[in-house]
Amino acid sequence: MTGDLVIETAGLRKEFRTRRGGLRVAVQSLDLAVPAGGVHGFLGPNGSGKTTTIRMLLGLARATKGSMALFGTTVPHGLPEVIDRVGAVVESPKFSPNFTGRQNLQLLARTRGIGQDRIESALATVSLGERDRDRYKSYSLGMKQRLAIAGTLLKDPQLLILDEPTNGLDPAGIREIRDTIRSLGETGVTVLLSSHILAEVQQVCSSVTIIGNGRMLASGKVDDLIGASTSYRVRVPDRDGAVRRLKEAGFTIHPDGDAGFRVETDRPPGDITRTLGESQVWLSELTPVRPDLETVFLELTSGEALGEAPEEGSDR
Image 1 (cartoon, rainbow, N blue to C red):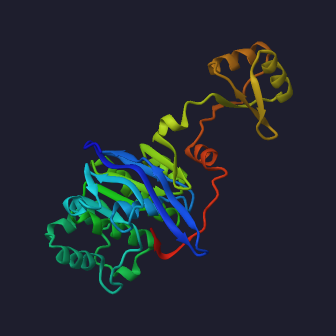
Image 2 (image 1 turned 180 degrees about the vertical axis):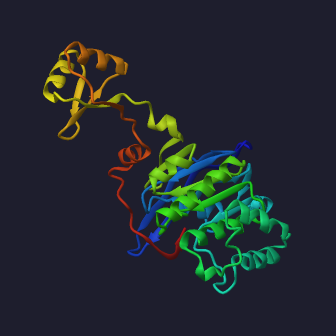
Image 3 (image 1 turned 120 degrees about the vertical axis):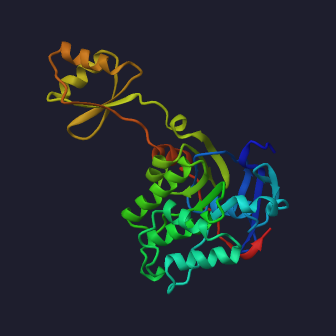
């Protein structure tokens, strides 16, 4: 294990007994490396092992094989040494519905021996300062999630682990959580974000790890995984003439709806403009088509069948 990584796993494996008495491997040979700072996406289909991995890192589930470390300290054995540097929202938050947001945080701070001055900072970070005196039961789902994050921020963690924080939220709630996560990453907190909402992840994450059936499929910077665009969407008045001329010039053409087409090429877009202009075909649109994280994700996880769910308490 290396000390310059906030999270590191090596050969991590988790086995479960299934309801039929068989064996299911939920996580297999997972090597996860999360450097300090920024937001790291942890992506995979439902049942791919994301939550199981997180639970093992936090000492909530026992690994069958392999090693794990937080801040260079081996866990779960060394978890007491680093747990104060870690905040996590893994399950639904447990708050008193009749208490205000502030009162819930005050109670939480008191039980953890945390100074009350941290409450103001936590509320400000998640933008709940104007609603802190409203009762928890009046909060929207997005506000409840932000209060849960505020609860983890009371101890000023260096690592924040969020497991599907936007589940069940409407678009406004998703945006609230996205903005909160982005601001946390910008302040120097390392955020491990487990999610299946790829468009949101792409907007806030600088790096990602994609898993399927407990195996790592890809890991790296988002821009590197997506890659540079070699495709352009073209719209012209004379579609057939444009396609014919571009094919004669050696361009690869793909259909893109009734009104246009895509050009696959490593050549600069000016070559498309010049080729068509020389034939008196004038462009209505020339737009680069950049692959997105969802496209990469679907390509990597296609065919990743889900295993049978384990029984409660059947972990090995």
